[in-house]
Length: 381
Ligand SMILES: *Cc1c(COP(=O)(O)O)cnc(C)c1O
Image (tube, rainbow, N blue to C red):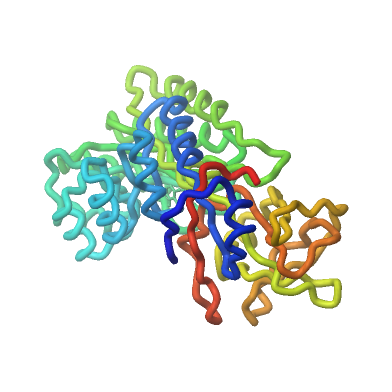
């Protein structure tokens, strides 16, 4: 993956002058910084970035420049990345299962915040991490509501276990906190309400006053033209419910969005390799590339099509079956895409809102997946 040193005006200027034959992700620093400011201004607590959603260095650097001072890391690689790009930032090591060598690495790099959802992993932390000044957040789960898929299937203690873990954390002298992750692309703010109320019940049952409550990521990014994320409503709900549920013991709040910070900062251009017998469209990118998430989370319909000279295709939208470049039959975008009926070989299909889980899940399967990143002043075509 190469990084263009030139800053282009917009994707159109790049496409019509470069005619790239490999997929291109366009990065807008101003969009990244605007998303960061929207969270910093609106969220009633500390905003951290879930690095896994897009660990591209320019992304992290722009969030840091915009004032993001904390990062949710899941591996030594991510810890290293943040220590290098944002040396003074807080690192929250919120992957609740860690090998001993990973814990040792985090301790060596000065990580002071960990999450946990089991007795066995808590025992490892107690053995290896000094309690003094270190926060351990108990991660719990509820049956899912409102998320695009079920995160609770992998991580999170039941409420009963969370009570037990929280007591142990406090008794061992760590700073006791709690965390949850309501799921991803959570368009229904009610998901946070149920979790925050349950966190208060767990803390009360454990007899522990928690220092912080991390309300996770899961804030939606803009995927469908017709559905603009209403982040401020969710922020207001979190603020209100935290006060109602905890009263005088209200903990400091933390959030750790991924897609809501990086999603809108990138657009993707994929080139039409072939229109097979007027029926099927073959692109140079697909579900093994930057479009990996579409089958999991659903389509993004913020699409425009450009001809190689940069002019927009304006034909009537017509449904097409769209395949990626590999020879695997799974490499097909979900359903049918509405695309201009005059779309032709050599055109570029440009998706907005492609910053999350795209650069980082792209593979080289079948020899495809060479992906460049070009920096642009704006993403509007
Ligand atoms: C992936 C993840 C996030 C970020 O999720 P988004 O849906 O991208 O906001 C936050 N916290 C945890 C623990 C995660 O695993």
